[in-house]
Length: 103
Image (cartoon, rainbow, N blue to C red; front, side):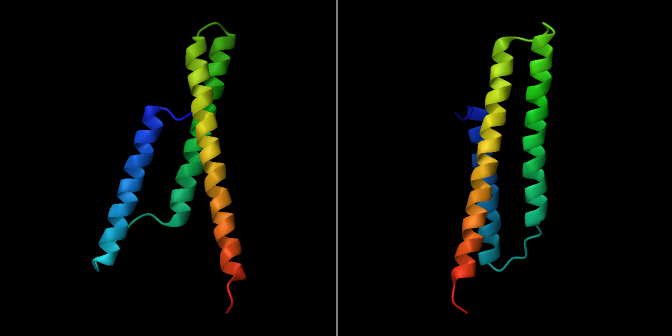
């Protein structure tokens, strides 16, 4: 289940990508991040979510955190990992489709 913050960030990122795509069609040069930079940022955000989840779990084990905070952190990490896996699957499928194309 996606939180409103995760959904809002996804919409903002999609809007930025659409703006870049529209600028390229208009003939303007766009100096955006490369695919590898976007990939590194995405993996980094998943790692950060995992670290936050681990920190919340450890804080709860020591009696310093609320159960709701831990559940929220774990759910956010689950959404981030699920999104990353879905994107990975789409990239692999696109690669396989390209390799099946006749030359």
